[in-house]
Image: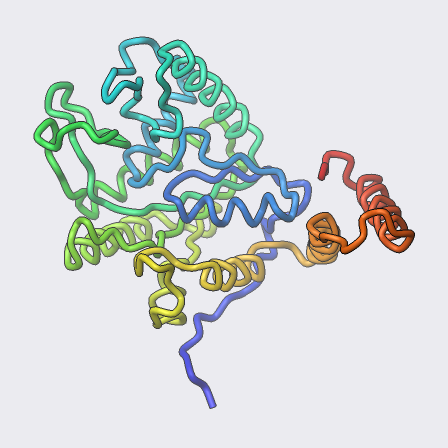
Length: 316
């Protein structure tokens, strides 16, 4: 008896993610969940150096600035609520010290450019097609930083605008890294502050826009995170207490689907070894000084040393 409809997946055989891969993740908070899983298994990753970015225009602007090596200056930041902020970055980069904000922004910019040049894969997760245009500067911002709403115009990107922005992202990435594999996905997080109908409209625009650009022959792919949540996990027991974000079980479920589709067969054994080590490192003994625990620690260090002989860059 089948109790759910399942989305079919095929193992990616041409450009799978291996332990030689460099993976960059940009976008909504769901990209951080997937990035966290990749980091747990010790894949080489760079995850949201500018913090969470929700819409395609924000990601396009950051990629363009990084590739153009356009450093942030004092003109790019502003003071509000006793902190300095940048409209192009998440509040995670905000600070009470102006110099620290600029330093962090430019460090993130350099790191982003270096990673984009070297990346084998980039995973871009889009959360919404709703954007906010700062009236005074006539620019679309990545984050409003709790500035009064009357300072912005709320706009919904059309399907063509989403598609154009995504197309620009791909063209920019290919200009410095022709062999990069791009994976787009839509976040299953519901943006209900926009409204129930408005959230669905937004997700529809993202989905339609992405699929105008997806081209497997050019290494531009789509992974159905949103569809997995909506169609396979159609139950509120897979949501966190806020009933908006996927809970840990849902994240693990979607990760396993992603892993099946995108992680190479050869890497699966290494992932199992790393998971054994990670669980061992989290183990809390009843008696830390016992001979049994000391032997456990010695065996754990031997496993780490053996793994690092094959992958010297992996550290615990």
